[in-house]
Image (cartoon, rainbow over all chains, first blue to last red; front, side, top):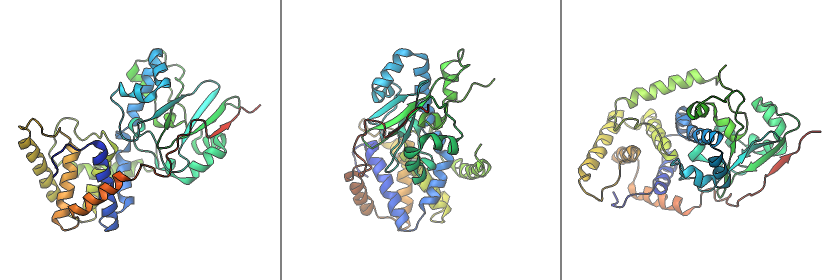
Length: 200
Length: 137
């Protein structure tokens, strides 16, 4: 074993290398690994982004920082690292709704959202969300936006990864930051759905 | 609720039955902080499910990696604690022990991965929306 302390990037590369070797040798299949990862995918990620969103909802100054430089604002939460170097947060408003995609591969803000869901990586979503975003949101995600809202689709690349600051749900006025974070579901930060409504 | 939630729950219980046999590390240790951790975790279970080694071999290997780290711990330059680095070391050790993996091949492949830019085909920053669907009047 080497003496120097390995960086996260080096370890991540080693894991990737190991996976490619094991698959080539037939020791396991990608599908089997994906399946196992799926079991745990919600344990890394989305709750980190949710905390950031809840803070932005309650602290206007933090929200400005987040919109100005998401990478730096997230660093305040200790969030960053692999695939999160240049993050840009786009804000949903009454007039504008944002949704993210990676048209070429599956670039995704892992540090805040965890592992991408399978549909995010599939060609169907990647091509259709660009051509007919309103229709995809409605047909595939059951999310019907008012006709008056403009939809903007943002293409993440390895240089710049977007994610969405959803609108704060109505009826959430008295909630604490932690309670608000529970309403911030992953899909709302991808832009394929709203934040959850407070339990009535 | 996802239609396969029950099936996922079952699969998860099977995995957790394995994990509970392992040294616990520290409180909250099995939570994942980095995507590679979840990947390394899944690989060890997938290779085991595929009959590549006994789970007890992996378990012993993990215990041994942690023990060695604890011994090195007296050294001020010793590496910081990372449960899943031990996990990865344990996985490499059992695979090498069964002749399924050579360290030199893995080192070489790791260098190749590091030399390839991430998402090599997709490095250009897109600063404007790739599509805009205006309001419907």
